[in-house]
Length: 435
Image (cartoon, rainbow, N blue to C red; front, side, top):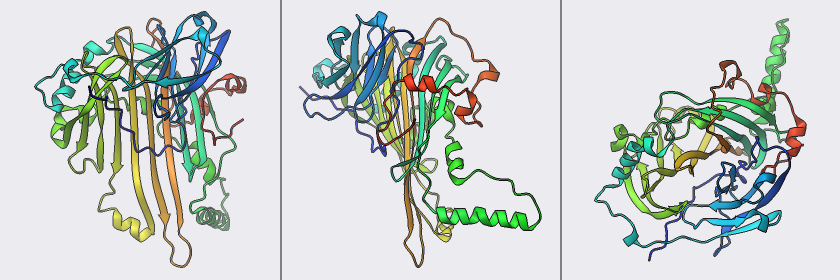
């Protein structure tokens, strides 16, 4: 017997739990709210990004990085079964009627013998190539609709400077079709009670004030600009459409593309289980630098269906040599710029669908000073999206005039609805304070 290789922990810069826990927007009427924690039954370590679902339905969520979740269950599904799935562990099932409002889910590691694995005379890359060839078999060839919860954060030294959350409706074309997803905002808001930028703040404020005096001295009218903090709050990483484009199977990510095969090293990292299927873990890493970054990660492939079930990777941003002298002259220090991505798929009706994507990154900035203490801040950004409901029948493209405007903040693309957010159950970072 061998112990299943667990999904490797990302060297995450998460400040706190990624807030992609949600309830289905389409679930109205009488509901029951269940919350809880998912953890390893032996070590009691929390399990992040475990899939929580109502068996036989498309309603579900995922756990936060500290293993928490919350789910709204409609009354007509009160006789159903709650299922929890996690890479390398046995599925956990329990009757909804048999649990209270809070549930503790201890997951057991799943193991199997190498004798049970179909040993193929393949190199590591062959498993990826085979999986890419079988996308038409393993993923839907029909368009479908999803509702998803989206969020993004910026923080400085653990203090939140920006927070946006939204409910999104998306039209998803089939995989391998040269057509992009289409999304529209149903509900959105940005956080209040946020912190203010500290890095070089005094210098930036003096610069704004100098510009104002110079304008008024010329006899011109000073047009009030956004404050430093307003600029950060209105900043965007591209929104839901950007994170949906991060689905590695949509555009064949470089490490999955045979044209880039020689730029990467591939290896067999171990075996696991996911949703009851035997999985082989294929590791990949760039040979040196590729497009100013070093990349390494894992692709989790079913040995039964040859489907790609999950992908996780880290990008280390390499500052080009030509830029380093400029940064030095300006007195800035840039340390540890990294980007982390996690993608999970889940089975519905014998096919695999995107379940969630999480992207987080961080960088340490230092402003070097000659005669006083250096300014130093660690900045983190996080984006998360989880598909909370799937619609396979009532499928329609999003009218062009209703689609997300990437140049406009999400909260400005829908009417405020404080009552909705008061009743919307979601696990958010514990340090975040919003009304």
